[in-house]
Amino acid sequence: MTSSDSRVTGTDLVWLAGVLAVAVLVFAALFNFAAHPFEDAAILMRYSQHIAQGHGIVWNLGQPPVDGATDFLFMIVVALVSKLGVPLTRAPQWLSFIAHLLTVALIFVSARRLFRAPAWLAAFLGAYIAVGPALNYINSSFGTTFFALFALTTWLCAVMVFRRNSTAYAVLFALSSLLMGLTRPEGVLLSLLMAAAVIWYLGPRASRRFFTCYVVVFGVLGLAYFLWRWHYFGYPLPNPFYRKGGGLLHLRSLLASMHNILQLCAPLLGVAVVLGIIVRDARPSREATASLIPVTGFTLIWVLLSNEMNWYGRFQYAILPVILLAIPAFLENYRDRLRLPTLRNWRRHATAVILVGVGLAGALVWQRYQFQVEFFPDGRYDVAAKLARYRDRGYTIATTDAGLLPLVSEWRALDAWGLNDQWVAHHGLVTPEYLDRYHPEIIQFQALGFSPLVAPSRDEFLIENEALYETELVMKDYAEARGYRLAAAFGPSPRWVDYYYVRPDLTEADELVRLIQETDYRYYTDGRKCIDYARLQWHEPAPALPQGR
Image (cartoon, rainbow, N blue to C red; front, side, top):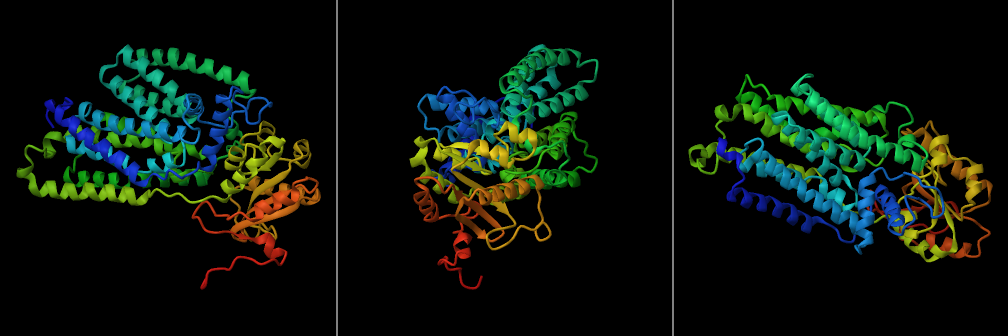
């Protein structure tokens, strides 16, 4: 690792092309073009659809704005791309894939140019993120990689402030922080953590210019956006934060966050252990130490929210690029002592090259194995596709699963859990009186711990989210008290069931019940064919269970 290694040469471009080729090949081999959006991703797409149609950021047409899509900037960009003619179902996937490729490229280039890492190490870091869980997020239409890209650019600006402490880089850091905060609300907290790392690195006096630029650019523009959104939506924070936070500490979410971070970078911890053995007096560089501030802080902040829909650790993924760049930052202090092999001198270090090559290949295989791209049919999508033929009737569905069902059916929807309903989020629980305002034609909810065969019981089921459980009971009692017909109760077990009720006074009530019952209902976590426990209750023929289970 010599000073000449800091230049991106023609050979580096070949390496970079190879790393990007790996990302593209993995995408081409594993991406499922038949995949439909995942539940939370479908929520954002409904907002983007309404924006593209010119209705603003609304959940139901004709209603006041509501901020249920926490990925604000991604939502806007998806709407713009959709407006340009890209199908709504493809826009988030292609945007996420482009962001993923840019992240892979930036990891490689910054490792080479900023940290003078050998080309093979920079390529490994790029390949590591290329074969990780990003394909799962892209396949499911999440904007996770979009957010991670801005987390990376913000941290790279912080590194440049470490080294040059110029006004230009301070302003770039603030602007990138603004984009990161617009993409996800936790981006604001991550920006503050990165700014704290800069101040720690430079010291209070040397960081005055940085701090001034940060306050003027990020503070003023961020405050302007905050005041606008407060005026536009009527409340300061995104709706899901009122629903999923609740002003409580969520210890299970903290444990899940720590587990996800370890899973994302377990092979990298092995590298750190090996380095500690080789260089017994190893001390990380100040830049590597500074990265601990955003990494540790970002891991801990998730104690503030419940862990629902943290698909493949997507809440924690944005910090992975920062962790990856901590490796070449750490090695900068020991490049002479370690004498890491390059392509020119590999024969003098043949044994080391073989061992390192096997270790790196093993790390990539482990990463790909841990985050296999999976897609399973979802019965909610199939039911919603059938309901779409009634989209022009003005019907309403009240549901706790406000993703696929409202997006695909295009029905007016009441989100009874409250992620997309201001009244529910701020009152804590849906009520029969509030359900009466919508007089829904269909009621759907996912029952945790009960079914037509199993009575609700807190003693027999460990309930992780008490408010969600109470919501399910309210909806069940409401449907039965108002005489709704139980069309189906699909589930892989009698303790995990999707209920569907139909209002009996509809002209199409019999047809809707039949369409729901005839659905080949699959469970979204593993694609298993579900049993209709409502039919078992009515003593109608039920699907045969597999032998030996």
